[in-house]
Image 1: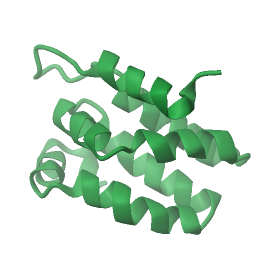
Image 2 (image 1 turned 45 degrees about the vertical axis):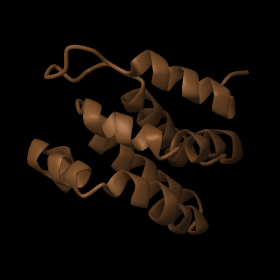
Image 3 (image 1 turned 90 degrees about the horizontal axis):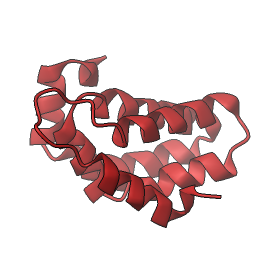
Length: 117
């Protein structure tokens, strides 16, 4: 997958695609139902894993709102697992290239979006 490699991730970030993804591509995928949500969430998971820049860009785009909605509204296991994987990738400080992580701030944004009980 293209957003799974560092060069692809850097290009995705450089073209400012997280905002476009959240505002345009996610709604189109969500309209396709659970398989679309699972696919969109998987892209976020792949892109955000070990890339602090993409984590921050996705969070600035407000991606926590549709991810929380996906977890709350869907009953499809694949959609929920993919959304949870995306949340984990966005809230995990796993980029060894960065001295600090936005994981705590990102986690708070998810809580404000309704991810808590």
